Length: 126
Image 1 (cartoon, rainbow, N blue to C red):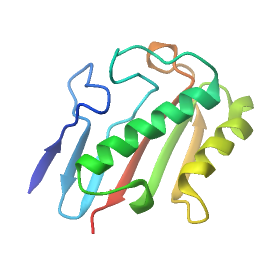
Image 2 (spheres, one colour):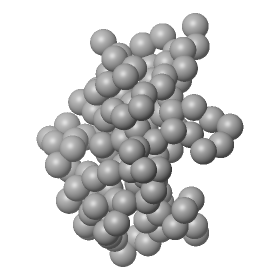
Image 3 (spheres, rainbow, N blue to C red):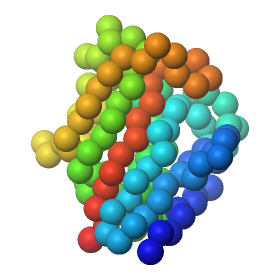
């Protein structure tokens, strides 16, 4: 059974997609960029501020699905500039702690809205 996940605590989709889909005990999120859910605008600041916003958006979506960041098993991370990798990792590690999920990180030629980072994930619902 496919269940569409929606929450007002994360940015609303700006295209033909949903925030997340739950199938059985798995949640698959759409890629999240650093949009403020209240304004729909890109947050000010650099890679650390933008990564924080992206992870807060993912956290809200996962919680709406009955999961959490602690239950994430895989992330795909897109950075506009791999020179931001160390700063990105500092924020990322604060959210995932000592038991981070499997991850792929790549440099993307261009991200939506001029974002510096985009992340999607797969999580388990227990």
